Amino acid sequence: MDRTRAAGGVLAAGSSAFVIAVIVASQTPGPRAWGLHLPGFLLGPERWLVTALLVAGAALLVLDFVAPRARDHPSRRSSKRPRSLRLPRWTGWLLLVPWCFLLFRLAIRTQLLGDAQVWMDHIRADHPEEYTEPLAAAVWALFSRILEALRFPVDPATMAPLPVFCGLVAGVLLWGIAGEITSGSRALALALLATMGVAQLYFGYIESYPTVSVVILAYLWLGLRHARGADHPAWLTIALAVAIASHLACLYLVPSFLFLTSREPRPWGVRAGMACAPLAGAAALLLLLGSSPSRWVESFRVAVSSVRAGHDASVFAKPYGLISLDHASDVGNAILLVLPVPLLLLVAALASGPSRRPEPDSAFLAISAIPGVALAAALLLPVAPAQDWDLFSILLLPLGVLGVQTGVSRIPIRGRRAWGLASLGAGTLLAFVLVNANERSSLRRYETLLGPGAKVTAFARAYGNELLCTEDFERNDNEAAAVHARRALEAEPTNPRYWIKTGVALDRLGRTAEAIPVLEEAVRRGPERPDSYFYLGNALYEVRRYPEAVACYRNAVHRSVPRPDYLYNLGVALYFSGQPDSARALWTDVVRRWPSFTEASRTLNVAFGTAP
Image 1 (cartoon, rainbow, N blue to C red):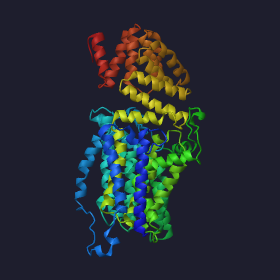
Image 2 (image 1 turned 90 degrees about the vertical axis):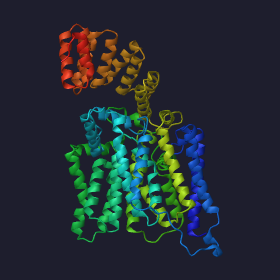
Image 3 (image 1 turned 180 degrees about the vertical axis):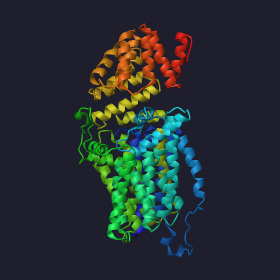
Image 4 (image 1 turned 60 degrees about the vertical axis):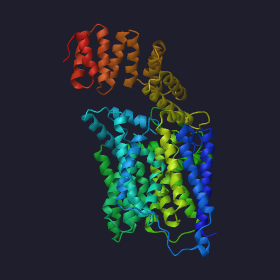
């Protein structure tokens, strides 16, 4: 069997095994096969469409392997060389129109992927999480301020254009990378790259990773160009510095930069300076952003220990170790979710036999990919593995590019084989995107990831149910919110945040008498949290215990940054406790400082007949 035949056999067998595994896992989707079970959460035509694409892709690859070919029969050989699908260079820009439409049309409908809900809350509070991703956090903060300046509300709908814009930039970069990794069909290479699961980041995903992934793609594109002798190394240096400042995990790209630096035809002293330049540039950017070295150290400490201050360390205990089949299954699921087709191509290329000495571009991609895969395999994080798919995606991104580059450069891909791979890639990405573009499907999948049989930490179970509770509040489903809040509290009773969620859910259900002791326990467990006092004040106000509500609101105001809702509610409690002048002064101040908070001006009109 020749090398091309062996590669075709691997593509046929691998795609068939993958599609069968997807179909089986989707029949009764559970928490363990989270890289395969996505079609099981789709309904009606969407499920049939995804299944048809996957089955068609595998069928074409099988047919490509078993069908007789002209080259296998000398009498049928033709002197004409098969033509690859080629498009004029300018047509690549036209693809951005349907790509942009899809990014908006199929944007996520819930904030359950990754830490999207937490990021949304931090952005609204004007302090995005910045320990490991300072530059990415700064980009989100800037975008939210632009929205506020334009008098747009800061919510998932208005924030979605930023990841969509990242997707457009990523599309341009992928077009550039496709041109670097193949001398054949650039359109095919682009299709294989664009249908990686990483693309889910651009469908309205509110997190640091859309911006981080774009910077990584820029680094890989510039690295490929530099490997063939194009561009000044300064551009690559800047890209790596920006990547590290965007997310500290991008330090895994440093070995590939050192590889390219070592090939520079310059004195060793100059090369040594070039090798240090990205780290110096990243440090300078981080310092300019207000991120101190102590924060960097803390970020790495958290990553290594996976234990956060304020929590019982036992809630982070994994039910399995780093060297275990369960952890290997998590890593395998992440790869199957993020880049199934590039992995298939990489295995097929390796099966075709050893290659000659690798070219600089292949070596660069391999040295970019190996540390990322190693880091992904070494991470044993306290959250559910499917929850951290976005972190895995940026670590595995170079592996995806390497898989496509190796496949298109070492395996003839045209005709049925090309269409089969494209169909398989479209089916895998569409399954992921459609699940998250449908609120019901997204909720079902997320509850499954935390359900019976899920091997997750107590922290992951609590945190996941908290996200579900927040989503329930957004949908005004207070019954479901109470259930999920209680599950979070049972999983991690030491965390005051879950006592607050449970108390608020009970209060919204009209069970205020039950809510008050729960919120009092929240205050006892988190005496420095302003929100515990605020929500306890709300409950006390509802049962007309106005003086106690005033005391709670004062504590909330004292412990928080200035907030219009805290001051407004304090004014309401003061008014009903017999202090109307104090209430009027507070509401007037709220109107002056936060003109968009219209409730204060309406209340002034009702209570006093005038408004400032």
